[in-house]
Length: 598
Image 1 (cartoon, rainbow, N blue to C red):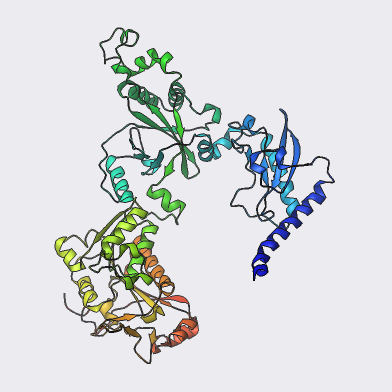
Image 2: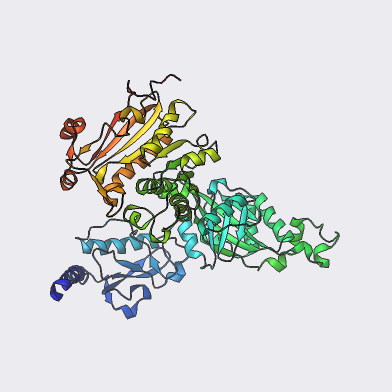
């Protein structure tokens, strides 16, 4: 058994050795390449099993370039290293401080069956990189290169508002571990409270300044001192320069400058921290000459103190965007749901997963209602875990999701929706959509009854059939049908997909509770369908009712001994299993809700 366990590892080693030999056999014939040892090169290549050196001539000088083959070559790319990298750093955007040369991006696909071609490509790319770069190269990679040049900071700078929304002055709050940036203090306190789970009460501190760069900022122009920062500000935005001088004069607190550079359809950013000097409080003859103390104009005060502050250092720092726009465009499909509000009734297995998916989709405000408490027997298919046992599902789910996605507004109400509505008559009116995943007739029938009698946003019902062999999502809108149009007086859905010889429900041993047997894997396609229906309805407000149905695999049907109902037999035989079906949902002439006179 031990030999078998080692075989895959040995195969990888053999593959690597074969690739190295192919490269060696070619390069040994070319005098331009010299094989060297790890001891002869830099720290970057210390783990490489083979290294070659080549001299690259450029118009200005000759460079020595080392390329090493890492242990996972040829599936991992060769590593390029410039021993004299410190001479090119901050002059070439593709060379890092430790001499690493960025040739093949981490995300790039390569042909691992051509190891010789990979090595030649890296050497050739190094030559092109060293032959020179223009200002546009630095502009294109401003964000990454600024971050590389910034010293490591104890405090992380997080930008809570979209950068496009920030104007001078903005709020910059300096805490022990973080620097929080937003257009107003309430945004900061909201984000911090969500992220930490504790109340936040930071005070307003409008010491943030924006400088918009309309041309490339090359590294040699990166500010290192206060005077260089002011010069940079005066070059691009004199009002920003004046604001920096005012803070230097009036405050001893830290100030923050954001450098914002347009990049395609977005922006790249870097930040500079400077310390206020409180110059107006210094009673110096040189500074106050001709004025009463505290009345010297900030520009004049700055000029008079220039000799003292020209060597005053600033701190360049990287930024971390945590705003809605960045998170849900960089890690989503780009749909803007930040202004949308959804009420989810029912936070059980289906509702919990739907709420989780909708938070990831970026719905700005989620209100969750459920009066049930999480129990151990819920864990197998619920989004919450053991640490949440004994808590109200709605309140705990809201807390967990808010900590995961602190830029959203997520509220949990541990009540039946009717009690919540009684306390807040505007509970429905404030929402763009209502979603119910309770799947209990006594709870959902009165909710459905409101659709023809009250001003209501679109209403969506989602539920799972026994064993999760199928699931449904009914969107009610306009003049289409309602939930009761497809149910009998006991709430049994007339368009059910599956039927069973015996009851599909299981009974709790020694108890009186019946429950459905299904696991999270069968549930997830249904939760995804419901969440996708919500997003679709938010982006394109529905005008007619429709039903979406997910039908699981034929194997799943066989495993739980389910058969197709007559309603679905012909459709599934034609269209197949493991897919979603959609149809318009019309009013039923026998529906007591839709036929009742209003």
